[in-house]
Image 1 (cartoon, rainbow, N blue to C red):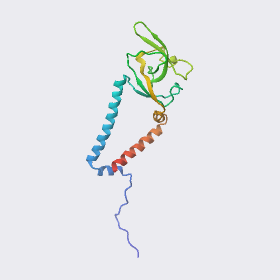
Image 2 (cartoon, one colour):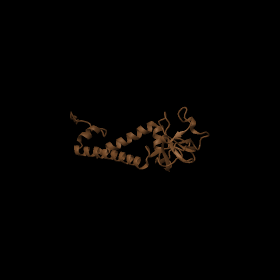
Image 3 (cartoon, rainbow, N blue to C red):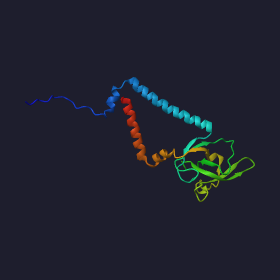
Image 4 (cartoon, helix red, strand yellow):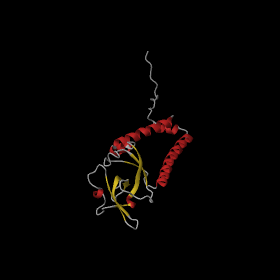
Length: 192
């Protein structure tokens, strides 16, 4: 005997019907998730601003992006900086500085310091692994750095912790893949 199929049956929905699942979610639960996310982001910003105030540096944590400071620091090392204006800059100190016309700060060692009687300080830097000083990196016509150029001074470091940041900057596809995985995880957590 042959049975006739039932007309109007529908296929099971796939697990990728995310928007349908979101519509079914309790609104209170959705607001709670959004509020949690906002609290995490605002907490991170408050911690960052607190570090700026405590350290006196506009960027209290930086990642070493090149091998110019080897063997002292390697690519991917995470540096902790302070920048108290009353501390004098001395030869041998490792500073992070910005040069006009460049977006990325540079981590190098102070090799010469010139102090004037009026308190003005000018200094010259060089990477430990470089053959010559940094005058070629400074803006055109600039031979010395001043205190205003300093972002911070290295006070401590964690080796290779910043490698994730370096990988994401060098391989943008990895960054987008990581964001996709994290987004999928969040959406799956919202379903449960």
